[in-house]
Image 1 (spheres, rainbow, N blue to C red):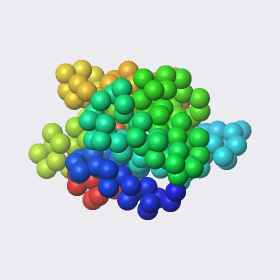
Image 2: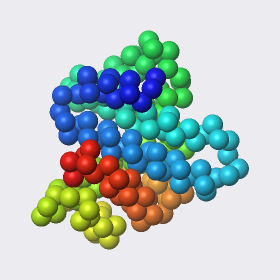
Image 3: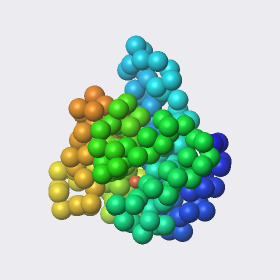
Image 4: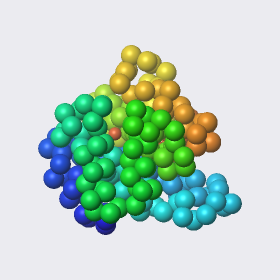
Length: 194
Ligand SMILES: [Fe+2]
Protein backbone atom coordinates (compact mmCIF):
# COMPACT_ATOMS: atom_id res chain seq x y z
CA UNK A 1 0.00 0.00 0.00
CA UNK A 2 1.39 3.39 -0.91
CA UNK A 3 1.39 6.38 1.38
CA UNK A 4 -1.28 8.06 -0.79
CA UNK A 5 -3.53 5.01 -0.61
CA UNK A 6 -3.08 4.86 3.15
CA UNK A 7 -3.92 8.52 3.52
CA UNK A 8 -7.05 8.01 1.42
CA UNK A 9 -8.05 5.05 3.56
CA UNK A 10 -7.54 7.02 6.78
CA UNK A 11 -9.51 10.03 5.56
CA UNK A 12 -12.29 7.80 4.26
CA UNK A 13 -12.64 6.14 7.66
CA UNK A 14 -12.19 9.12 10.00
CA UNK A 15 -14.56 12.09 9.97
CA UNK A 16 -13.04 13.93 12.92
CA UNK A 17 -10.24 16.12 11.50
CA UNK A 18 -8.45 16.05 14.86
CA UNK A 19 -8.11 12.29 14.63
CA UNK A 20 -6.67 12.59 11.12
CA UNK A 21 -4.21 15.16 12.45
CA UNK A 22 -3.29 12.82 15.28
CA UNK A 23 -2.52 10.11 12.72
CA UNK A 24 -0.40 12.57 10.71
CA UNK A 25 1.50 13.59 13.83
CA UNK A 26 2.23 9.99 14.78
CA UNK A 27 3.31 9.27 11.18
CA UNK A 28 5.76 12.18 11.20
CA UNK A 29 7.25 11.18 14.54
CA UNK A 30 7.56 7.54 13.48
CA UNK A 31 9.65 8.56 10.46
CA UNK A 32 11.86 10.87 12.52
CA UNK A 33 12.42 8.25 15.23
CA UNK A 34 13.14 5.61 12.57
CA UNK A 35 15.95 7.77 11.16
CA UNK A 36 17.29 8.49 14.64
CA UNK A 37 17.34 4.84 15.65
CA UNK A 38 18.88 3.68 12.38
CA UNK A 39 21.85 5.95 13.07
CA UNK A 40 22.13 4.52 16.59
CA UNK A 41 21.94 0.89 15.44
CA UNK A 42 24.31 0.29 12.53
CA UNK A 43 24.42 -3.37 13.64
CA UNK A 44 20.75 -3.94 12.77
CA UNK A 45 19.49 -4.85 9.32
CA UNK A 46 18.20 -2.00 7.16
CA UNK A 47 14.92 -3.96 6.91
CA UNK A 48 14.27 -2.91 10.51
CA UNK A 49 14.29 0.71 9.37
CA UNK A 50 11.97 0.96 6.40
CA UNK A 51 10.92 4.57 6.87
CA UNK A 52 7.90 4.17 4.64
CA UNK A 53 6.67 1.24 6.69
CA UNK A 54 7.20 3.09 9.98
CA UNK A 55 5.26 6.03 8.55
CA UNK A 56 2.38 3.80 7.41
CA UNK A 57 2.10 2.21 10.84
CA UNK A 58 1.76 5.70 12.33
CA UNK A 59 -0.67 6.93 9.72
CA UNK A 60 -2.95 3.88 9.86
CA UNK A 61 -2.86 3.00 13.56
CA UNK A 62 -6.10 4.73 14.58
CA UNK A 63 -7.94 4.51 11.24
CA UNK A 64 -10.81 2.49 12.73
CA UNK A 65 -11.12 4.50 15.93
CA UNK A 66 -14.50 5.89 14.88
CA UNK A 67 -15.96 2.83 13.19
CA UNK A 68 -15.23 0.79 16.31
CA UNK A 69 -16.89 3.53 18.39
CA UNK A 70 -13.71 4.04 20.40
CA UNK A 71 -14.35 0.61 21.92
CA UNK A 72 -10.98 -0.71 23.06
CA UNK A 73 -12.14 -4.31 22.73
CA UNK A 74 -12.64 -3.99 18.99
CA UNK A 75 -10.28 -1.10 18.11
CA UNK A 76 -7.82 -2.22 15.37
CA UNK A 77 -10.05 -5.18 14.28
CA UNK A 78 -11.51 -3.30 11.31
CA UNK A 79 -8.30 -1.77 9.99
CA UNK A 80 -6.43 -5.04 10.46
CA UNK A 81 -9.21 -6.90 8.58
CA UNK A 82 -8.93 -4.46 5.69
CA UNK A 83 -5.15 -4.75 5.55
CA UNK A 84 -5.35 -8.54 5.63
CA UNK A 85 -7.80 -8.46 2.71
CA UNK A 86 -5.32 -6.27 0.86
CA UNK A 87 -2.58 -8.83 1.65
CA UNK A 88 -0.49 -6.25 3.47
CA UNK A 89 2.52 -7.57 5.36
CA UNK A 90 2.28 -9.15 8.77
CA UNK A 91 5.00 -6.78 9.97
CA UNK A 92 2.85 -3.75 9.10
CA UNK A 93 -0.23 -5.28 10.76
CA UNK A 94 1.66 -6.26 13.90
CA UNK A 95 3.09 -2.75 14.02
CA UNK A 96 -0.41 -1.28 14.07
CA UNK A 97 -1.55 -3.73 16.73
CA UNK A 98 1.42 -2.81 18.89
CA UNK A 99 0.03 0.62 19.86
CA UNK A 100 -2.84 -1.20 21.55
CA UNK A 101 -1.48 -3.22 24.45
CA UNK A 102 -4.78 -5.08 24.88
CA UNK A 103 -4.32 -6.53 21.42
CA UNK A 104 -0.56 -6.94 21.45
CA UNK A 105 0.93 -6.80 24.94
CA UNK A 106 4.39 -7.89 23.80
CA UNK A 107 6.28 -5.66 21.39
CA UNK A 108 8.75 -7.56 19.25
CA UNK A 109 10.80 -4.97 17.38
CA UNK A 110 11.79 -1.30 17.48
CA UNK A 111 8.96 -0.24 15.16
CA UNK A 112 6.39 -1.82 17.48
CA UNK A 113 8.01 -0.27 20.54
CA UNK A 114 8.14 3.13 18.83
CA UNK A 115 4.43 3.31 17.95
CA UNK A 116 3.57 2.33 21.52
CA UNK A 117 5.50 5.28 23.01
CA UNK A 118 4.91 7.81 20.22
CA UNK A 119 1.12 7.51 20.22
CA UNK A 120 0.89 8.99 23.71
CA UNK A 121 3.63 11.60 23.30
CA UNK A 122 1.92 12.99 20.17
CA UNK A 123 -1.15 13.62 22.32
CA UNK A 124 0.84 15.35 25.04
CA UNK A 125 2.67 17.63 22.57
CA UNK A 126 -0.63 18.54 20.88
CA UNK A 127 -2.07 19.48 24.28
CA UNK A 128 1.03 21.59 24.97
CA UNK A 129 0.47 23.51 21.73
CA UNK A 130 -3.22 24.05 22.43
CA UNK A 131 -2.53 25.82 25.74
CA UNK A 132 -0.21 28.34 24.08
CA UNK A 133 -1.85 31.74 23.49
CA UNK A 134 -1.42 31.30 19.71
CA UNK A 135 -2.02 27.54 19.82
CA UNK A 136 1.16 27.06 17.83
CA UNK A 137 3.75 24.31 17.95
CA UNK A 138 6.41 26.93 17.24
CA UNK A 139 5.89 28.28 20.77
CA UNK A 140 6.28 24.86 22.37
CA UNK A 141 9.71 24.03 23.76
CA UNK A 142 11.24 20.79 24.99
CA UNK A 143 11.37 22.35 28.47
CA UNK A 144 7.67 23.19 28.42
CA UNK A 145 6.73 19.65 27.37
CA UNK A 146 8.95 18.22 30.11
CA UNK A 147 7.25 20.48 32.65
CA UNK A 148 3.79 19.38 31.51
CA UNK A 149 4.95 15.78 31.48
CA UNK A 150 5.48 16.03 35.23
CA UNK A 151 2.03 17.54 35.84
CA UNK A 152 -0.08 14.41 35.87
CA UNK A 153 -3.34 16.37 35.82
CA UNK A 154 -2.39 18.06 32.51
CA UNK A 155 -3.63 16.07 29.49
CA UNK A 156 -4.18 13.19 31.89
CA UNK A 157 -5.15 10.90 29.01
CA UNK A 158 -1.58 10.97 27.68
CA UNK A 159 -0.15 8.03 29.59
CA UNK A 160 3.17 9.12 31.08
CA UNK A 161 4.41 5.58 31.72
CA UNK A 162 3.89 4.72 28.07
CA UNK A 163 5.83 7.82 26.95
CA UNK A 164 8.65 7.19 29.40
CA UNK A 165 8.89 3.62 28.12
CA UNK A 166 11.00 5.17 25.33
CA UNK A 167 13.95 4.91 27.72
CA UNK A 168 13.72 1.15 28.25
CA UNK A 169 12.11 0.05 25.01
CA UNK A 170 13.88 2.33 22.55
CA UNK A 171 16.93 3.38 24.54
CA UNK A 172 16.02 7.03 23.97
CA UNK A 173 16.19 9.30 27.05
CA UNK A 174 12.85 11.01 27.66
CA UNK A 175 14.08 14.53 26.94
CA UNK A 176 15.70 13.41 23.69
CA UNK A 177 12.51 11.60 22.74
CA UNK A 178 10.54 14.81 23.32
CA UNK A 179 13.06 16.81 21.25
CA UNK A 180 12.88 14.44 18.26
CA UNK A 181 9.09 14.22 18.39
CA UNK A 182 8.49 17.94 18.80
CA UNK A 183 10.78 18.62 15.83
CA UNK A 184 8.88 16.10 13.71
CA UNK A 185 5.54 17.68 14.52
CA UNK A 186 6.86 21.22 13.97
CA UNK A 187 7.95 20.21 10.46
CA UNK A 188 4.31 19.50 9.54
CA UNK A 189 2.71 22.19 11.69
CA UNK A 190 0.79 23.50 8.67
CA UNK A 191 -0.91 20.15 8.12
CA UNK A 192 -1.57 19.84 11.83
CA UNK A 193 -3.07 23.35 11.95
CA UNK A 194 -0.90 24.06 14.99
FE1 LIG B 1 -3.22 7.03 18.40
